[in-house]
Length: 273
Image 1 (tube, rainbow, N blue to C red):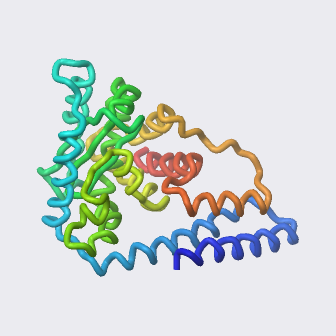
Image 2: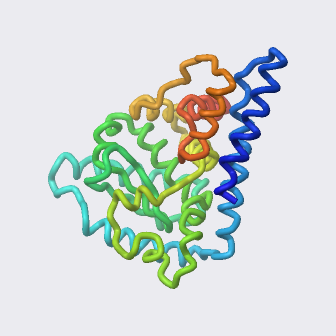
């Protein structure tokens, strides 16, 4: 199914682009069409994973295996600036995990800092949430921005995205070995974490609502985006060919475009006003 989806996406996007351009209407409303096709294909992929359900305890066991290897591989040295930032990540993580929105692994979340992977944060099944030292360097002066990042990663766990990402690989008796060949290397782990653009937008919305539940600023996510270089849409008009290309790239990437992501977060943050 997925092998055919890009071709279907091209055909639909080109057809709509042609009709719109012939009618003299705006050419800038085609991306939702390609997004719908891409998300439908990815939903079919995720749906097939339901054949391999994971209970909360099974999901936790997978996370514990990965966490044990990651903890052996990389931890900030005690007494260093990095260690103090790791402590801040944990402190804010416990605050985030105390939100009434957190239910699936309530009281069981754990927060780590790792000395690899550039500027990143990620979650693995079972409620283990990580930040790289590069990310903490960028955000440690803005606790609400860190809380948004934590909320986003917790959202991937609470909304079942992490379980979905691993379920497809759970057909083997050892899901960890099926996923990573039994060896946890952070770059390989990050490459294996595939969330769809819709799931990323859902996690952003979850984070904004989590901040609101903690009486924090839900718009802090925009500062997170600024720090990570996720710019606003440049406002350029796109012709049919540009929209087709944008739709295809959207199908193959795991994160939505920064302009779309910012606009969605602005709408979510505005609900608090």
